[in-house]
Length: 277
Ligand SMILES: NC(=O)c1ccc[n+]([C@@H]2O[C@H](COP(=O)([O-])OP(=O)(O)OC[C@H]3O[C@@H](n4cnc5c(N)ncnc54)[C@H](OP(=O)(O)O)[C@@H]3O)[C@@H](O)[C@H]2O)c1
Image (cartoon, rainbow, N blue to C red; front, side, top):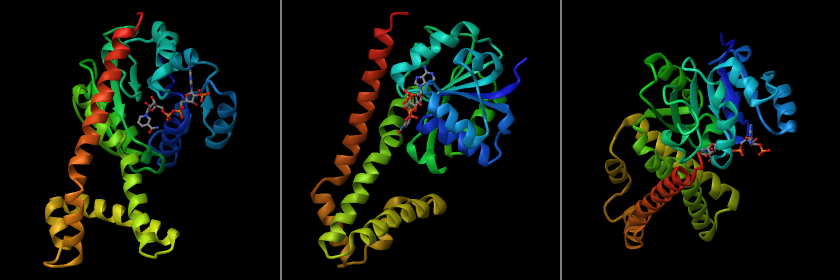
């Protein structure tokens, strides 16, 4: 009945990154993908670049796709849901990557018997290094979950969680790249203050973040033990660590994740309560 495996609604930053990676990693055959974007220029450019079919409308896309991935910003998701809602059947799966848009909210428009998946990913998806969390409602079958996990494995790492944890995921890894860029920039500033050329300082800082993260993920050693490996008694590192602890770096980062999580929760409940549906 559906001649496309995947329909992508919205091919902006995240939607186009997914499209590109799905095709380049052969996760889904390009002939089995259809996309739609309200921006005509984006449609023309991306259909040329990725040789992928673009539908004439969201409705047309919804009529042909088994899995429908909605990659528009939360402010316009209601418009999209209203457009496609009457067409969606129980044979299809809706995947939303919109931050803070709950199953409860989606079900104001989409029949509650339809399979729904929510995704919280992050911008490293642009280069295939995302941290993605996936949550599903009770209608999703195992094979459907595996299919959607496969989509997001094409852009990085995937963890499965219950929907109630997605605000915390937003606060940690969804917003997290911004915290890390500040840390990288600040470390580079430290290098510049001590006389390093700016470009070299930035490269050293970024590679230090990348290498440390890889060391942790690949060895599975606790971060405290990895930190202790660097900090020789009476040395430079423990002297710097004392500065970080005095400035409450840990408490500040914990509070940042907490604040972003609470903000995500409040946006989520405002959206659910304010809907006219
Ligand atoms: N960027 C992030 O760091 C990040 C991280 C995690 C999750 N997310 C989630 O990912 C989603 C997409 O974010 P993004 O950064 O990729 O946004 P984006 O770059 O603005 O992409 C959204 C695309 O959808 C198009 N669009 C708008 N209305 C449409 C409609 N009615 N039908 C079809 N297409 C429509 C937009 O066109 P116009 O530009 O012409 O409006 C744009 O091309 C958001 O819900 C966000 O919460 C983003």
